[in-house]
Image (cartoon, rainbow, N blue to C red):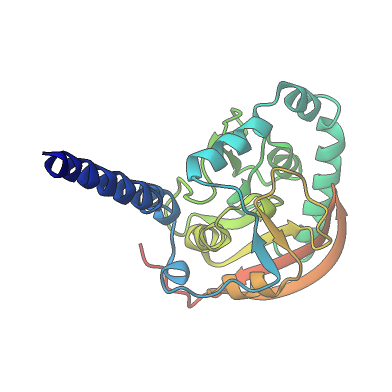
Length: 253
């Protein structure tokens, strides 16, 4: 009788142990949809990220990443600063910057322009101030009439929509390959993209990646050519990289 009683206990013990050791595997399966939600061919083929571009650890799901970004975008103190103290100053700086691009022939009053990660739209207001009236911003939180809602990993626009795209939030991209792929998808052939980035590593706690040279950007922009690279002093960012999408680039829908 004693031997018969211990057998079920042994079975229960092995069952509990097998369940315990299978939990990490089950957790990994539950997270897979987040990591593949915005994948690109580069990621799917296991192409290694260049050493000069590193994704910061700590994001266990895409939802947690978005929540952290929203914490900054919706911070009432920051939004007050953006719309009051910083408003005129940033519009003046961006206006001079965009005027320079017009002088180089990289932007015109006829351009259809997008500002990625525009927050409250100072960049858009600056574009409209210099005559680029067909311009709009995109951010996680809309700010009508200057900014529409959108995720830069999955832009809410059709293929070949814009002549010009500008962004100074590349460091906030959790999936840099998808960030760039969406720019190239929505840019017209011959269109221009201008990025302001920090190579010094002086970014904030909301940044999702660290960039240490322009080489990873050159590799990610597969359908575009580098026009120029230069130094800037733009609100904590130190480098400007200009790309032009090749006119023969074929974009799949």
